[in-house]
Every structure is written in C-alpha cells, then in structure tokens.
Length: 391
Image (cartoon, helix red, strand yellow):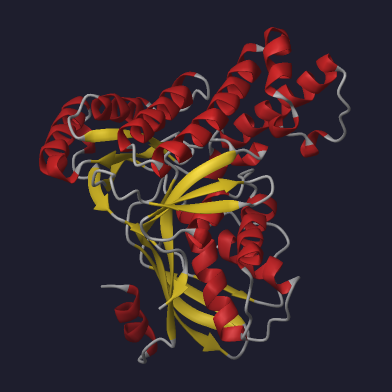
C-alpha cells in the first residue's frame, strides 16, 4: 500500500496533493559541508512522498508507513524542545517556517519512504517534503535558499544534528543527468551535464542491513573535532579567531595546516587531513565529470571512501566490508559510504553492462561475511533525478 492508498483508507477521500523529495548521494565531498567545503551530488529517483490535504483547525496529523507512532501537533503550539521521536523533524520545520510566515492551516497526511533508512539523507528529505506540503496548504512560496535553510535549521537547532547543507542542497537544486557542484560557503553552484563521450552509468545503493540514527551517532563529535583543529591552527599561526561555533576549516589556508598539523592531537589532524584532501578531490572530480572521464571520477569517489575510513574514522565492520567488496568488483567505477558512514549504506557508480554480475557478486560475498543480515541487506539500482516537487 502506498501513501495515497493509505490516505484514502484513513480519510475516505483522495489527497489534495502529493509532495516528493528525493534521496541524495554525494559521490565526492563527504564530511565537508559543515566546514564550508565543496561537494558533488545527485538526487535519486527514490525518496519521500507525502499524500496530504489541508486541515482547517491548524492541526498537523501525519501517519507514517515506516513508523508506528502518528505525529500530531498544532501549528501554533509547537514544543520548544524536541520530543525525541521521528516527528521532531516535522515540528522543527513547522516552527522555523512559522517564524518567517504566518501559518493558518494544518494538514493531514501519510508519509512514505521508498528505500530503507540510513545514508541517503532521509531526514532532510522528510523535512523538505513536509515543508513543501505545509507551504502548499498555506499558500506560501519559498525560494530554494529559504527551503534549504528552514530544513537545515530544523535539523541543526531543533533535532540537534550539526550537519551542513549538503543534503538539502542536493535535494533542492539537483537535475536529472547533471552533477551538482556546490560551494557551501557562498552557495554558488553549477549543474554539470553529462559529457556526450561519457560511458553509461547507473547508481547502485547497497544497504548494509544496519540502520542508524544520526543524532545518536558520533557525527556531532567529528564536527567539533574539525572546529577544534581550525581553532588551534588559527592560534598556532597567529590568525585572529572568535567564537568556537563560528570557526571553520575553510577559514584556514592549507599552508597553515601543513605547517602546524604536527602540533594537533592525532584525531584533529586526521579530520583536517580528510577535509583538505576532500576539497581537492571535489575540484578534481568536477573537472573529470566535465570532460566525461567517469573512470577518474569513480577513482576519486573511492579515494574519498578510503579517507572516510582512515582519516574520518567512520564505518562499521559491515560498511567497511561492503566497501572492500565493491572495490574488487568488475563494473564498479567507484564508490564510498553514503551519509555519515556509521551504519547505513554504500553507494557506487556502476557500468550497466555489469549490473547483474556486480549485484550477484556483492550480495554473495557480503552475506557470506554477515549471514545474519540476510533479509535485511538489499541492493537498489537508481537513476539521477530532479529535486523536490509537488506532484
């Protein structure tokens, strides 16, 4: 049963609209946006759908096809503190939208995710799909930047995840068949088309069978380690520095890092090493895509994955095993962990001619290593897609 069918079952009428926000992948540019780095990204043809209709009493009422508890609150009485359930993302969105625009209409709806949770920015997709629906029933039109910032504030300031705007930007700006190349410092971006000489590709998503919750992971600690490195590097070099929360590696020239990195604690140095090397990989990856060199683009994506393991130090045993199997599979141009990299999934760009054999090999070898995950491990072949839309 999909969200539209469930809506009809509950409310005995068809929804007035369906909002869709795609999931996203970041082939190169991992763990970079919160320090104002550069990223690459695609939206996928899978994502979050919400079938909805206006509710005149101001109540938000959402049923999820993935979670048992129904979300219910009033647009004028949103708790100031998170309630520690999946509806916190909705509350955060409604709260920060209400600070910019007057809300007079609630909504009833059913929310549906088309892939397992973990590594594809499902939280950002939920925020943006819900934001689109809430704006629709209230007659509000947002700019792309407003959409991104409201969804980001919901995660940062309400849910408490110290993420950057990679996820939201991919899910808003992306276009089918084009690589998003974004500088998160000034939000300048380019949608680079596929070179006519580029070999064909598909996007493969390999779910480890291990789901994760970002706010409960070590994600925020990694962000603080980056800021600590930047703060210390500024101090060592005599640069001016202000508030810790307003300190970013993007503020510190690479030459300063090279000169003083040996003074940093090992963990801080590793986080910074990943960030600076990833910045260079993104720039090189954008140029490889521009000239149609998918082999080089894939190699850089795989190098990003290796740095995520050794410098960013993420990855469960399951994800590391998946990554190693991918790297030894014919037809895989390249890939890495997707998302924070603590559980979740891996992504890869693959040659469609090898799709069947790659899926077979990766499935067999992974489940041989982790037989208890049979039935939870899954593979999904996707295409790139446009960003958020009301269907």
